[in-house]
Amino acid sequence: MKKVIAIYFSDPEPMGYPFHKEQYLSKYKEIITEVEKAGIAVHIVRGESYNGDGIFSHGWHFEGDELISSEGEIKADLIFNKDDKNTIPAIHDCKIINQPEFDDLCVDKMKTFEAFPDISPKTSYIHSYKGCTEQLASWDIAENELIVLKKNFETNGRGIFIIPVAEVKEELYKDWSDILIQEFLDSSIGIPGITEGLHDLRVTVVNGKPINAFLRVPKEGTLIANISRGAVGTSINITDVPQEVMDLVQKIDTKVQTFFPAAYGADFVRSPKGYKLIELNSRPGIQHPDWQKTYQLFNDAIIKMLVEAVA
Image (cartoon, rainbow, N blue to C red; front, side, top):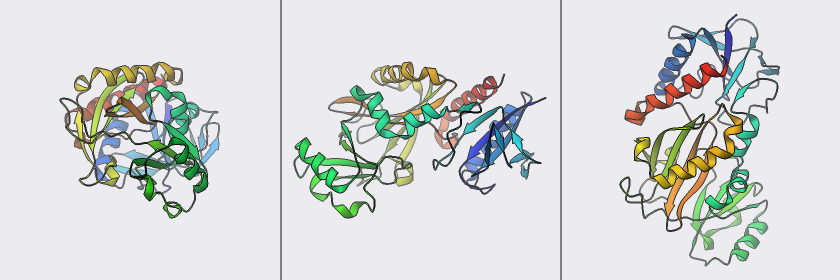
């Protein structure tokens, strides 16, 4: 009997995120085709469809270019979690990439800081506006200095403010629970040989192997380096990534290798304090030709990881 891989997305609609964008749809088709060549069945599962023990109530699969409804329940040997809204339950009764504990380490930015405090910006966790003002006072930061505020579990740059301390007002958030305060790291000094100014450098890692990197430069006049917030991205060969960053990747990987098989991204900046880890991403997106010469390396590594995980 064929092994079954279920690829999970949050959006309940069959052609919802990320299939609503042709560049992602085409690359998922390519990856699924290659996995199926290894004699593995691949199904798309979505939303609130998990019944436990690796079973989903319904799903879809590709026949050629067409996504069609699969018959009956889907019993997965492996779940590939591509949830983008943290809707999937913590699954311990079926093999899953990534494991819930590793997923939690990445999604919960405070846990990331606690796991890697020596290579992260100074961070505090607060749950009220009053707590924020008290924390800022304890840090003794000047009113004109920049500070970073983040909603802990948000993604794609949502809920992030990089503003002077004087502009931190209660109306910034309707709900001040689960807020991170971080020191601002000025990355305007750039990365030698890669960029001259503000940046964010993501290194993608699959089963302990750094595959490629992606430089994100904030839109002019802003400080937030998320593509969804207007940043410009450029693919970087892994051989061009500074050794100081690769040493940090190795330090991270040594601590998380118990969670293999796994794929993740690690985001870094260079400031006068050196290279620092900003975030971990446990669900790095499938890459497409916008990543130019390196995207196929990552997708091939994902294919290899999935096939080997059910071997």
